[in-house]
Image (cartoon, rainbow, N blue to C red; front, side, top):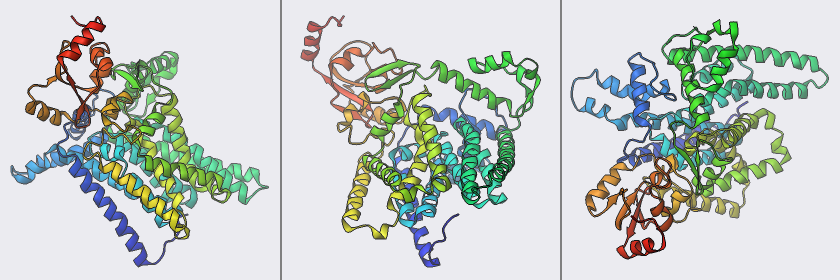
Length: 543
């Protein structure tokens, strides 16, 4: 159950403090997104959102989901208005991005509320600061994509499961089922929540019942089975209904044998189904169609280029532990220290561990599942954005480090103040280029491309800056077709061979170091005729 907080004035102060930090997050995000060009996936996400509002959910690719209709809604409403300043304002693409920022702000509020409910006000405040000053959260909160939506909805779903598990109220179970259903139209990542929730709820209930009735095992089994059956029916029913609503009831109950699949998995299931292939699928056609295409791309590597990590390039096959490395480099060091401290204190403190099956199971089990899945079974490792789904719950949990804040020593509070200042300064130093953020383990920002690439560094967000630089430096040559001297500018993805032939710029990548960057992304090289002449003498790569 949620603890009751102090008096009304104290609650008002706490809430106003949190809202002030969230308002800063909104304003800061809006300011830092100014001048950002469209990232690679935004046009298609926006296009699918437009289709949904036009009552057409037919797919043109795999991963786009109905949730982006929210981003298109302001422009859709504007089209009903007379031509004027208000209509022109609402039709700007930045307004579509603003919708994602607002949703991310609601997630931030939940992070504060949940951590405060578990550990107290100081903990809630700390969790909120970790979320607000996460450069990866900031970066993806500014975009018309589905990454922040699924991150938020997974967090909301886990929160309401925690509420329902501990209250036992049917109302909380119904809300949890509805939130869980809504999460299914954000991204296919949320699909795993249904079985995961049933497992967590079963473990929670078994622990509580056997603790309270240690000699009544049969009673416990019956109670657990009863609640799992009721909640499972609610959850599955809610998911089916909300998926149908999201995809506009586009061909639900189509026979499984009538689907046209691309992935080996679904083709195998279809061929082995026999008479079961006549069973109608209760979800809309484009929903299962998209899932099939996602599995096909993830298993074959089709459509997302090569995978790059720490100087190595792979074609369609992921690196084990990829997201551990990405997090080590792209999550602020201060945040990592807080998280490590929270984990160490929690598992060393027997008193705190007593609450695991009551509270922390709903935070740490989803985190553990997604950490194992993405690091060891997921091949489309093209950016930390896929991994954001675990961050809010980690921050809620990390708030536990600040439990009983009033009892902290002055030296402990001083260390935390220093870490906070370090966190804020590290994040502000990258303003406004947060997609390209790397922590101080990558001290020289010109070398970030040597560690990670793709949407970890360049997702097309700096094109306006690149155009401006090239217009002001006409002597600069952008990705020349032949080996030459002079000032050369290159995209890290093309330089490394992520999106192009790895040999095309091997001469540049292997023999020269960049002298600067454009928007912390594009690499600038100054190659003198003498340097090139010396290279041509020592290596047979020049024409």
